[in-house]
Image (tube, rainbow, N blue to C red; front, side):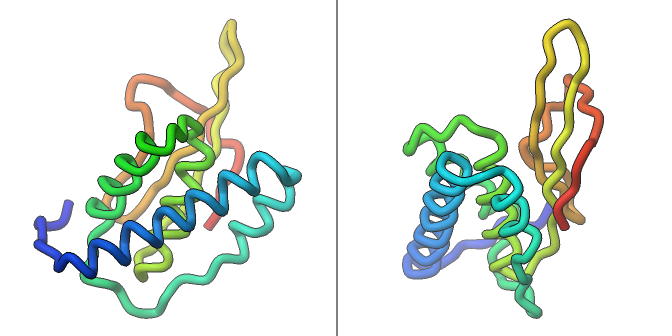
Length: 133
């Protein structure tokens, strides 16, 4: 992972407001729109051409804090929020959706970047069924 960098107060405010906006957008879309429309919206997101000085780790830490504060316990919403925010800051990422077909069916969404996986539960083995790049 990248070396920890100190950011100015204004930079942190912009990052937090960007994450908050993305969390609210995807919370609304997931709860009030069809799954296909949510996927289509996410697939059409554009990435910035230049990388920001804000690391993926910083984005992840603030997204987790905001999700806890807002009581967002949905991995799909968190993954989409992270995906859009990471792309907004010029990094590459993809959302993976997987299922586990055991006694109890379950699904999970997580992020993969060049630096590793975010929101992936290491102990559970989910079979990837869809990918958003």
